[in-house]
Image 1 (cartoon, helix red, strand yellow):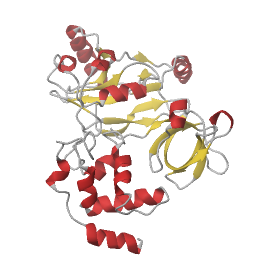
Image 2 (cartoon, helix red, strand yellow):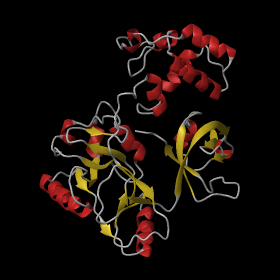
Image 3 (spheres, rainbow, N blue to C red):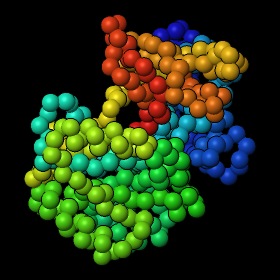
Length: 350
C-alpha cells in the first residue's frame, strides 16, 4: 500500500456519523440520503481501502480533493450492486433464501424423460409466503396488488416482462418505489419448495393452486417431456430463434434441495462467463469518439478485448472500470481466450 494511503488511513479512520445517514437536504446527497460530504470527512477503514483501489483502477491517487467525485461514481451504481452494498455496509443482515441452483447441461448426458421448459431472462424471485425477495435475499418492493393473492407457502420463480427485456425488467423490479411498469411484469412460477413430494407432485399441486387463483400476472411455467437429445436441441433452436435465453431441464422424481444440483440443468447454445472491466478502448469508424471495446480480465487472469454485443447507449456510457460483466462466447481459442465473445449484461448479484 502507498505511504500516502497509509497516512490517509491513520488520519481519516473513524466510523460514519449518524449525520452521514440523514436525508433532509438534497445538496451533497444521493437518492439513498447519504451525505457525501460527511462520508468523505469521516470514512471508515473499509471505505478508505475501497476508495484507494477504486482510484488506482482509474489511474489516480485517492485524496480528500477527489473523494467526492469517487464516491458519487460509486453511488451511481445500481442499488443492489455488490460493490456499492459493501461500500455502504448494507450486506451484513441480508439472508439468502435456500434456492435450488442449476448446473450446466453437457452433450451426452442422459436426459430422456426429463422435463424441459424455457429459461426466462428475468429476475429470480422467491416468495417466502409473506414477501418477495431476490436470490441474494434483498426485498423486492412489488405493489400490494401484485402479491396480495399469493399463497402462504413458498414459491420459486422468475419476474419477467418479455424476451430480450432483461434491462427493463431489472429497472422495474428493483425500483424501491413501485411504478406503473409492474403492470407488464409476470411472476412465472416453476417450483414450490414448501411442498413435500417429488417434482411431479409439486407441479400438480402448484398448477392447481395457480389455476384456482386465476391471475394473469402469476403463471406456472409449462413443462414438456424430453424424449431425446435431438428433441432437446431442436426445441432449443426454435425458442432461441424467437429470442429466448435457453432451456431448463428438471429430473423426473426429484426433490427440491437447496444448493447447486445435478437434478436441475440449464441449456444454452453458447457459454456464459464473467469478467472485470479493466479499461475502455476507443472506437473507430461509426464508434469514433466513444467506446469501441472493453479490456476484460477473467477470473483466471486472462485478458481479452470485448467489442461485440453493445447497444449505442452502452457505448456512450460503458460499464466503469472495476465493474463485473457477463459475456457469451462459443468455446475458447488455443490461447484460452473466449471465442466470438459478445457483451450480455452487468453481473449483478441481486
